[in-house]
Image (cartoon, rainbow, N blue to C red; front, side, top):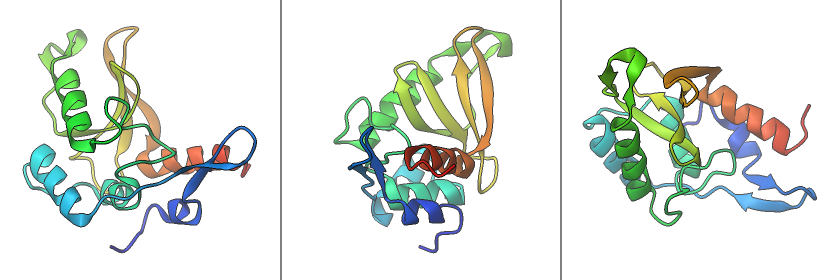
Length: 158
């Protein structure tokens, strides 16, 4: 796969701990696994380019994002759990349940997920549910920008 958006994730394939030691390495997903995820969560339609790159480079484990918090050994069941949790979460100020296709990219807290909509182009904006007012908020960054932000802070590149 040609990498267009996440070249820095190739350049910095592992995170560092508080002492500057390499401690978190990315683990990729196979193309077969990515195709299965697309079939399951996007009706077989290809994911946005940057999400495909992320999964290809670090789909099983990524030091920039935590998407295996529920069960670190199984990304699909973890994604299923997060998808169901978000889809069952009614957003009062929208007056409807969560129905657009999305993919959870960060699950730092159960019930507080970062996600991208799968219908927003090749480098979608990152969103989350703001539990203070039960609304969907944007981070104001695309997925590639968020990953670069984490890489910069993890490796003190600023």
